[in-house]
Length: 162
Image (cartoon, rainbow, N blue to C red; front, side, top):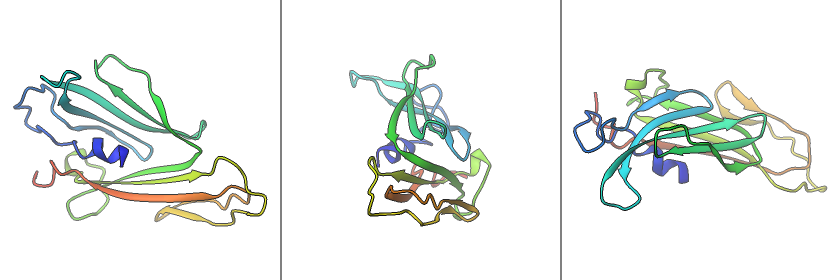
């Protein structure tokens, strides 16, 4: 839900006709990283401001990171989820088919596989988790519980775009 609120704003001001010069558009669409511009009220709530949002899974660190670069000057990322075993972003067109074209993206599907903080000696994870057709993870055969969460987010401002 936290990521969904930001991602839903993609497509706001696609023609760059409001106070935000850059509009909201996807810049990078990869399996484990999404970068997009956003247009929102500034901290004072009196003017609109451009900023860049980066969502990135750092596999080696098992962390999901978010960067909100409000000054567009390269802000550092902050982890928003720890114990992430796998993360996948899938981009869909208006017919819900996978697309790699930035202009065709109308939906973003996120799958995140998270692990419990502490092991449970009475449990062994022997489940193979399927994040997408052809993309599976596990079984880990360890003592951690895991939860797979999948959500599809409509880019509501892009729904009517051609």
